[in-house]
Length: 135
Image 1 (cartoon, helix red, strand yellow):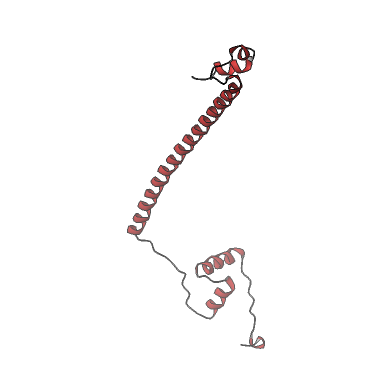
Image 2 (cartoon, one colour):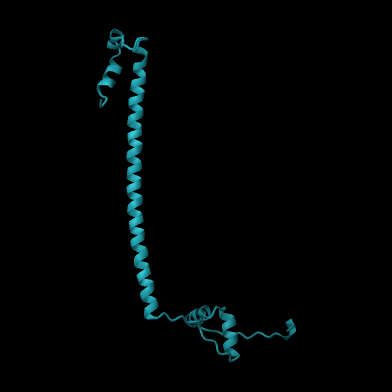
């Protein structure tokens, strides 16, 4: 069909009528213009309707409930793992602080393995830190 063979028909409808045509056309996977043209030509167009049976609905509902329970379990596991991870990080930081304090003690250890108590008594910060260790 060439452009000279095409003719245009214009008609006025209310907004409410247009919205109704638009909804029906959408359910038929067409534009409102295409749907109107087919209707004007007398073509029988029926919207695509999917019918869900009770058994299918029951299966979907049951599957949804199973997925919801599995999601809740996984969420609880993730929360526990997160808490355990945070606790492990806290313990690592505490251990790092202890190692840091012990490393400050190394200069006071003599070659024979004894501690130079006279020099250690003058380091009040280290003595305070050592007294706060949980040993």
